[in-house]
Length: 217
Image 1: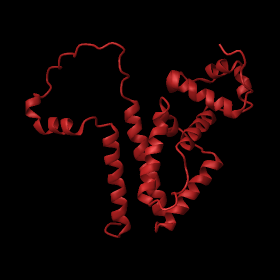
Image 2: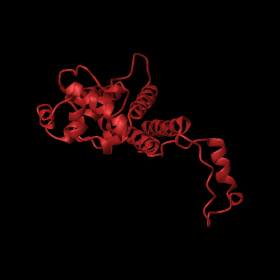
Image 3: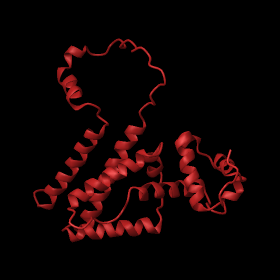
Image 4: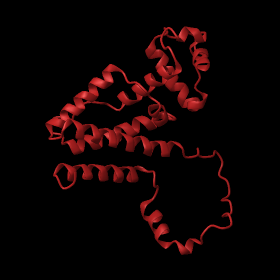
């Protein structure tokens, strides 16, 4: 047990909630449990947050900002910037259990996050994007990352002890009848791994490049 708890601030509350999220998952994160962890009664939290949804919004905001927002660096192309941002965003979501679900449930982000987003959009317009296309591009990549990580985090947790491989259920096709699928799995590896993520991301970026040249609308 902690001998001394920190002063109860919004920042302490969010940091503690994120730590509890890692321990319990989204289903186990309750206002009552958070209050107990902070050593206060539940009503004391409502001096800082009005609802649980507001808490989830604050947690989502912290996860998003932890990825490092902002326009491209000096000399960085928009393609490299978008790839770097998306990769960092995925890492930030994966850093917390159910991180993608927390962000997906967010209804409101802080003014600071919105200002950083505005700076990113403005930078993209300086690279030739219209405001609308800049917004669509960033949101499309964001939705891709969210969906990819949701799939990653929905996978069953590895067991502590290895178990024997269960027999295949009856009715499944003979593996010999699926040579292309088997070859794809063998060559591509984990469909939710880093290589698969990078492939999808680069496909989106190349599609945006094609759109920017006017080949498609």
